[in-house]
Length: 299
Image 1 (cartoon, helix red, strand yellow):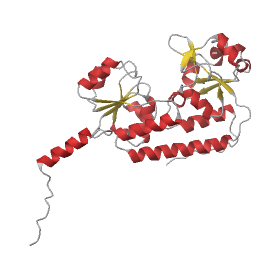
Image 2 (cartoon, one colour):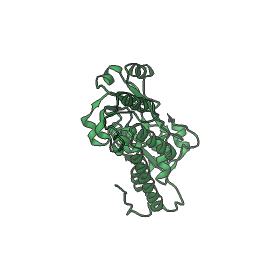
Image 3 (cartoon, rainbow, N blue to C red):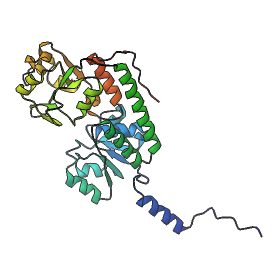
Image 4 (cartoon, rainbow, N blue to C red):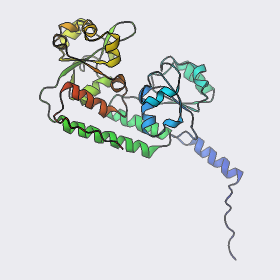
């Protein structure tokens, strides 16, 4: 007797079991097709993974790629509103630990929307972990590993192009916040790792952690060769003279030589898939490249 063929139509119980498995499995969010990203680097990662079409909203730090300009804005990542987020009917919100306020994210969760906090450490290991976390949530692990491999190849090419640097340029980062107070960055800040990758030395690496106000005394004691700012910051300060008018910078070696480098703010602050591009551009500006034929590796 010929055995009966297996039915091609799953039973309701099988469908229910499959749904429960997908729902309870760690990592991926089943059928998450309406994403909101509230961090610029996370947004870049989503696009780099080929998942940009799933985004329906971003925060104001999400400035790259240009496609983000067509998406709804939910405001600044630390000043979100539940109404603004929920109006987009998302099924997943990607955020870093500094997103908030916490009560708003709790309201989002209470409304049945998944909120995933993604680790955000400004180191290369931290970047790998961040990419893998996003790739896992979006059920794109292979794309995540491919992206990591591409970044590592780019960084290896940059390291080779830098060669052996005998005298690293001493770099001081300057940022002026809304209150008008000059800040700089030390260890733990994304720009600290960026300066190192570009062949420079962050003059405040040993004495400052993350972002802290910059005093004229600290600026003079740091003896920087170069002052690094964002292109946006340079514009806000009305050019080089405005930069040198802050925190006694005019009296430093960098100030006396008027050596100020302005870098695209998304390259400077987004510790994400373009880290090698950012470091390569800064290296060019610092003059630390031995091989100016450095070529970016793309898919």
